[in-house]
Length: 178
Image 1 (cartoon, one colour):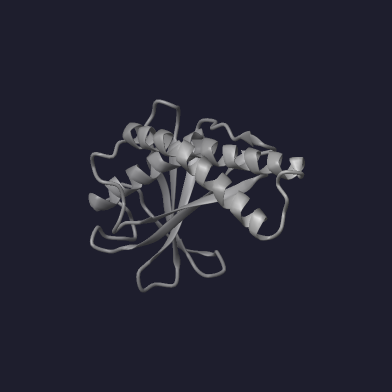
Image 2 (image 1 turned 60 degrees about the vertical axis):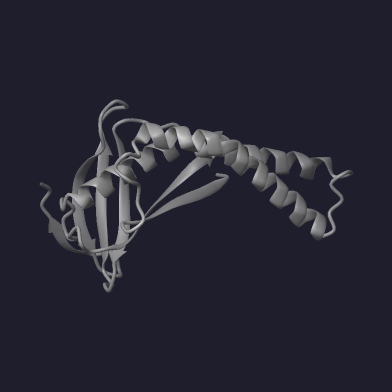
């Protein structure tokens, strides 16, 4: 595994209604080369500052280039795009007051961890795809959990399960899905 990436979404700063998954994917495709170049520049500067001679260390040069390319690919990886699409659906449901355990006037931070690269290869999405968002409402200590499912590539993400867990991960409450 090369990296684990997490998304963090605040319902106060989430995507607008005109940010469809397709528009998000297009924006991410444009950003990918810049992210790759920025990561390469950062790594070169870091190793040079710490005394590494990149002109003679071919293996380090290769590793930096590979890592930077992987960062760029991560922006357009299916996992990244699908997770973004799930977040957009979650935000829309929140705005409509359809997220159990949190009203549309309450806010919090939610995250979803996923691996976008395994053994130097992008992870492929398989369907049905399942993503669980975990988060805390402002002013609470228990975790709200929301599992979304997408049955096929052309289907929309749907809320499948909602529950609250204590600090030990034990389920306190299951909420019905509308």
